[in-house]
Length: 217
Image 1 (cartoon, rainbow, N blue to C red):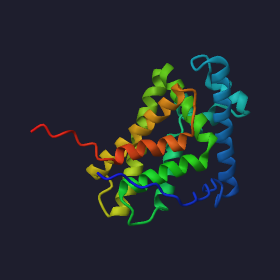
Image 2 (image 1 turned 45 degrees about the vertical axis):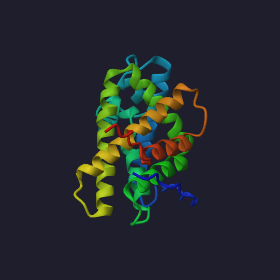
Image 3 (image 1 turned 60 degrees about the vertical axis):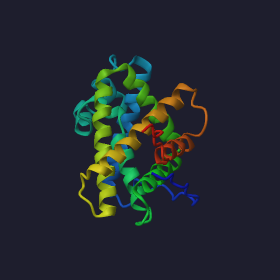
């Protein structure tokens, strides 16, 4: 596999999350954000196991039943993989139609990280650190990442006119997502030094190289 070249074009602006939404949908989005913000604040203060749904509801100024309408469990409040996967798919669909799958995926995901900026950096690292301590969060994170792989695979398959569950593309996306997970772990373990988007791009370049083993035949 030949190494993909880095795209030097200027990143597109982040899609406005509220663009095209009616008043009702904007209110729902703000309520979801308020619940998540309250959950994170309380978890940081009290710990995951000592934070209850009732406490989160009170901090967000909503009822417990409202919390459950938005999130079936605490795990869903701290995980945002589905949102980041949606952003990744949006950026992927903006890539040139004739771009090879790995290059398109590389550019879309690093572009997403650059555009979302500090929010992506700090939020993702916080969730990984929490997943290390809480088995329920770790299990839900894995499930969410599997769904992200499926969403990105389907988007790549759509570009190529292939089945949504195409085996080759699924393996490619799985390798990329696994590599990016290791990037974030490395970044956190080294004091968050360096630009995360640049590290992500470097990791995806590694996947694009020809790493064939020496021929001992």
